[in-house]
Image (cartoon, rainbow, N blue to C red; front, side):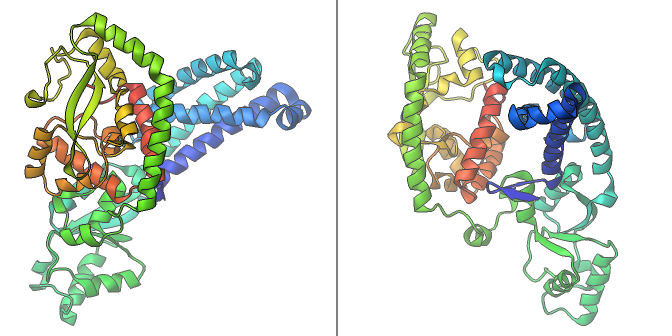
Length: 464
């Protein structure tokens, strides 16, 4: 895993993205040589900004591949889905570059170069993806991994690791209980017990061991694991692996000691000052730029249905304090007051005709810029709920109060990864993403979430 912006990314996925950017660049360099010849290609690359133009095209390809989820684990191992989406990317890039070339002609590479390069890119990308799928699925190129322990976390890790070949982890076994080997295990176990444990673990020939025990008191074979670590086997803590792989905190097996002593969960004052200043500046600029659009939306709402243009609703913010959230009204007047809140459904009869469009495009949330300007919210943070829903989650979901450590946000880790939440189970998983954000809060993570939010809004995902 490669850690970047306080988030872990599979090294194979990062390598795939970089390699495909290089392939696109290589394809257009070959196209330029084939079309212009060596001398003219040299002149274009060095004196006519040929290389920056090629890099721009390469960036457009990789960005479109990201937006079509070609680097997501659910798509990476599906050959038919990869083929379909690569074809969609090729078509989208053609349209996108045609529009950009029309708007700004100096970006053009030339029709001949683009046509040759486009054909080469199609062949190279499809061939490379096919080869990558085959190599990625081979166990010999993955770390042999043993999961140690019987817990809900161990089962979750087992399912996650076996379904994501891009992690480069091949689970060779799952030892649920070592106690049956020689009775009670503890750090001061006898030499005979220690050797028995070592033999049991070494029979799997692991490269790494993930410890995911529910209860470790008197059961964790510390001496044996230290011996294995000294031999070069990587020993990892289950919650840390789960966090790195999924981008969320394992609430089902969270221990108070881990929550207290783990790195993170500490919001530095300089970071909060930066977030407040940037929120004021960017929200003020955004309000000025979107004011004509907001006025137009307000007029259309007024003409579309009876009722106020702005919908006001109480939400719970930092430290449990209640504030008023502003949105454009997307439902019939009086349909969703504070004392009559129920989650929106996909085909909710409460939506107005315009409201469906506003919610699908997230334009109904533009007035939240005023909440950000006032200091009720930041751009990025846990999504605030209405008081009755928030207090219900507080009673039923462990550690839920930790969401109130920071100010809520217009978007957040849960929004870009989980989507719409309607049940307690949904909100428990949403909390797992929010706790990950709070634990790893940083400027880089905020930028990453905002980048993902553009993708979510553009593709209309998770909206109701």
